[in-house]
Length: 154
Image 1 (cartoon, rainbow, N blue to C red):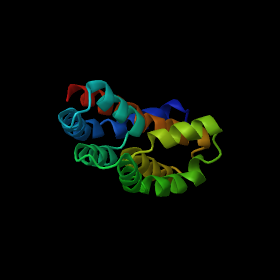
Image 2 (spheres, rainbow, N blue to C red):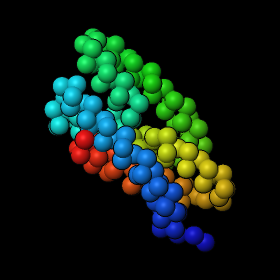
Image 3 (cartoon, helix red, strand yellow):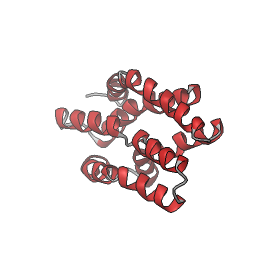
């Protein structure tokens, strides 16, 4: 029987290599955001709240062109529509989790956490909810701090 610690560290190992990819993109986002007129705090807050590089780059570009806020938000939401599909796909695996944990899963669902988790769930059909959650959060652990930290560097 596996413990929840084992899937967590497996997930962490799967998520860690993505930091190498996130470093240049999050640094670039920090540069682009500040050059577009956002303060360092605003750029960091955007990364913390949105946690979606493509949507953030889209929003900053539109904001720099002084597009109305409604259009900026609509464009960012459109870019992130794939997250709704990701969430629907994760529901059979994580849908029985308490509401608070499901909210955290929704917050941490990005391309990397989704792809790694679905692959692991398919490879480990005997995993229970606890193990699946541990793996998911293991993947997420190195990703958000790297995104935030290197947004700040940029």
